[in-house]
Length: 176
Image (cartoon, rainbow, N blue to C red; front, top):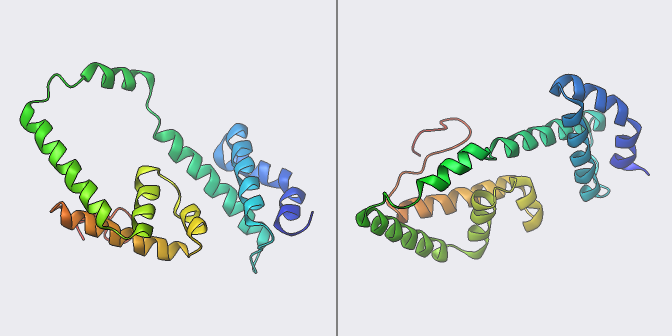
Protein backbone atom coordinates (compact mmCIF):
# COMPACT_ATOMS: atom_id res chain seq x y z
CA UNK A 1 0.00 0.00 0.00
CA UNK A 2 1.32 3.46 -0.87
CA UNK A 3 0.34 7.04 -0.11
CA UNK A 4 -1.23 8.05 3.18
CA UNK A 5 -2.51 4.54 3.86
CA UNK A 6 0.96 3.05 3.69
CA UNK A 7 2.40 5.86 5.76
CA UNK A 8 -0.35 5.40 8.34
CA UNK A 9 0.39 1.68 8.64
CA UNK A 10 4.14 2.28 8.84
CA UNK A 11 3.70 4.71 11.77
CA UNK A 12 0.74 2.96 13.43
CA UNK A 13 2.54 1.94 16.65
CA UNK A 14 4.18 5.36 17.05
CA UNK A 15 0.78 7.04 16.59
CA UNK A 16 -0.76 4.65 19.11
CA UNK A 17 1.88 5.43 21.76
CA UNK A 18 1.62 9.21 21.22
CA UNK A 19 -2.17 9.12 21.32
CA UNK A 20 -2.23 6.92 24.43
CA UNK A 21 0.00 9.45 26.24
CA UNK A 22 -1.99 12.42 24.98
CA UNK A 23 -5.47 10.96 25.58
CA UNK A 24 -4.67 8.97 28.71
CA UNK A 25 -6.36 5.82 27.41
CA UNK A 26 -5.31 3.04 25.08
CA UNK A 27 -8.96 2.37 24.18
CA UNK A 28 -9.49 5.99 23.10
CA UNK A 29 -6.25 5.87 21.13
CA UNK A 30 -7.31 2.68 19.32
CA UNK A 31 -10.76 4.11 18.55
CA UNK A 32 -9.20 7.30 17.18
CA UNK A 33 -6.78 5.31 15.03
CA UNK A 34 -9.60 3.18 13.65
CA UNK A 35 -11.58 6.30 12.71
CA UNK A 36 -8.43 7.83 11.21
CA UNK A 37 -7.90 4.73 9.07
CA UNK A 38 -11.48 5.04 7.77
CA UNK A 39 -10.92 8.70 6.94
CA UNK A 40 -7.66 7.89 5.13
CA UNK A 41 -9.44 5.18 3.13
CA UNK A 42 -12.18 7.64 2.10
CA UNK A 43 -9.56 10.15 0.95
CA UNK A 44 -8.22 7.77 -1.69
CA UNK A 45 -4.93 8.84 -3.23
CA UNK A 46 -4.99 12.46 -2.00
CA UNK A 47 -1.89 13.39 -0.03
CA UNK A 48 -0.91 16.64 1.70
CA UNK A 49 2.15 18.42 0.36
CA UNK A 50 3.82 19.15 3.70
CA UNK A 51 4.62 16.71 6.51
CA UNK A 52 2.12 13.89 5.91
CA UNK A 53 3.09 12.18 9.21
CA UNK A 54 2.04 15.27 11.20
CA UNK A 55 -1.10 15.49 9.06
CA UNK A 56 -2.04 11.89 9.95
CA UNK A 57 -1.42 12.48 13.65
CA UNK A 58 -3.59 15.62 13.54
CA UNK A 59 -6.32 13.56 11.85
CA UNK A 60 -6.14 11.07 14.75
CA UNK A 61 -6.32 13.87 17.33
CA UNK A 62 -9.35 15.33 15.51
CA UNK A 63 -11.00 11.90 15.38
CA UNK A 64 -10.51 11.52 19.15
CA UNK A 65 -11.95 14.99 19.70
CA UNK A 66 -14.98 14.16 17.53
CA UNK A 67 -15.54 10.95 19.50
CA UNK A 68 -15.35 12.77 22.83
CA UNK A 69 -17.84 15.36 21.59
CA UNK A 70 -20.22 12.63 20.45
CA UNK A 71 -19.96 10.85 23.81
CA UNK A 72 -20.60 14.10 25.67
CA UNK A 73 -23.95 14.42 23.86
CA UNK A 74 -25.18 11.03 25.12
CA UNK A 75 -27.64 11.23 28.00
CA UNK A 76 -27.16 9.14 31.11
CA UNK A 77 -29.83 6.71 32.26
CA UNK A 78 -30.95 9.02 35.05
CA UNK A 79 -31.23 11.95 32.61
CA UNK A 80 -33.41 9.86 30.29
CA UNK A 81 -35.61 8.81 33.21
CA UNK A 82 -35.97 12.43 34.33
CA UNK A 83 -37.06 13.43 30.84
CA UNK A 84 -39.51 10.53 30.65
CA UNK A 85 -41.01 11.45 34.03
CA UNK A 86 -41.36 15.08 33.03
CA UNK A 87 -44.10 14.33 30.50
CA UNK A 88 -46.29 16.97 28.90
CA UNK A 89 -48.82 17.31 31.73
CA UNK A 90 -47.38 20.63 32.87
CA UNK A 91 -47.62 22.31 29.46
CA UNK A 92 -50.45 24.75 29.24
CA UNK A 93 -52.37 25.15 25.98
CA UNK A 94 -50.85 28.58 25.28
CA UNK A 95 -47.29 27.17 25.43
CA UNK A 96 -48.25 24.30 23.14
CA UNK A 97 -49.88 26.71 20.67
CA UNK A 98 -46.81 29.00 20.60
CA UNK A 99 -44.53 26.00 20.11
CA UNK A 100 -46.63 24.68 17.23
CA UNK A 101 -46.70 28.12 15.64
CA UNK A 102 -42.91 28.41 15.84
CA UNK A 103 -42.46 24.92 14.39
CA UNK A 104 -44.75 25.85 11.50
CA UNK A 105 -42.80 29.08 10.89
CA UNK A 106 -39.52 27.14 10.93
CA UNK A 107 -40.90 24.59 8.46
CA UNK A 108 -41.97 27.45 6.17
CA UNK A 109 -38.52 29.07 6.46
CA UNK A 110 -36.83 25.77 5.60
CA UNK A 111 -39.06 25.30 2.53
CA UNK A 112 -38.06 28.78 1.31
CA UNK A 113 -34.34 27.93 1.35
CA UNK A 114 -32.55 26.74 -1.78
CA UNK A 115 -32.20 22.94 -1.77
CA UNK A 116 -28.45 22.97 -1.05
CA UNK A 117 -28.74 25.38 1.88
CA UNK A 118 -31.63 23.38 3.33
CA UNK A 119 -29.66 20.14 2.97
CA UNK A 120 -26.58 21.70 4.60
CA UNK A 121 -28.58 23.15 7.50
CA UNK A 122 -30.28 19.84 8.24
CA UNK A 123 -27.05 17.86 7.94
CA UNK A 124 -25.09 20.24 10.20
CA UNK A 125 -27.66 21.13 12.85
CA UNK A 126 -30.16 18.26 12.94
CA UNK A 127 -27.97 15.30 11.98
CA UNK A 128 -24.88 16.84 13.70
CA UNK A 129 -22.62 15.82 10.79
CA UNK A 130 -19.12 17.33 10.52
CA UNK A 131 -18.69 20.22 8.09
CA UNK A 132 -15.90 18.33 6.28
CA UNK A 133 -18.22 15.39 5.56
CA UNK A 134 -20.94 17.72 4.26
CA UNK A 135 -18.39 19.50 2.05
CA UNK A 136 -17.21 16.19 0.60
CA UNK A 137 -20.79 15.16 -0.09
CA UNK A 138 -21.52 18.40 -1.95
CA UNK A 139 -18.13 18.56 -3.67
CA UNK A 140 -17.26 22.01 -2.32
CA UNK A 141 -14.90 23.43 0.30
CA UNK A 142 -15.64 23.49 4.03
CA UNK A 143 -15.54 27.27 3.82
CA UNK A 144 -18.33 27.29 1.22
CA UNK A 145 -20.42 24.99 3.43
CA UNK A 146 -19.86 27.41 6.33
CA UNK A 147 -21.05 30.33 4.21
CA UNK A 148 -24.16 28.47 3.03
CA UNK A 149 -24.90 27.34 6.59
CA UNK A 150 -24.62 30.90 7.86
CA UNK A 151 -26.96 32.16 5.11
CA UNK A 152 -29.49 29.43 5.92
CA UNK A 153 -29.35 30.15 9.65
CA UNK A 154 -29.69 33.90 9.03
CA UNK A 155 -32.74 33.30 6.84
CA UNK A 156 -34.40 31.14 9.49
CA UNK A 157 -33.53 33.59 12.28
CA UNK A 158 -35.00 36.47 10.27
CA UNK A 159 -38.19 34.53 9.49
CA UNK A 160 -38.61 33.57 13.16
CA UNK A 161 -37.74 37.12 14.27
CA UNK A 162 -34.85 35.89 16.41
CA UNK A 163 -31.25 37.06 16.68
CA UNK A 164 -28.63 34.81 15.08
CA UNK A 165 -26.05 33.90 17.71
CA UNK A 166 -22.60 32.99 16.36
CA UNK A 167 -21.43 29.67 17.86
CA UNK A 168 -17.77 29.69 16.80
CA UNK A 169 -14.93 32.06 16.00
CA UNK A 170 -14.41 35.69 16.98
CA UNK A 171 -17.51 37.09 18.64
CA UNK A 172 -18.95 33.68 19.50
CA UNK A 173 -21.97 33.85 21.78
CA UNK A 174 -22.97 37.30 20.63
CA UNK A 175 -25.89 38.10 18.31
CA UNK A 176 -24.65 38.70 14.77
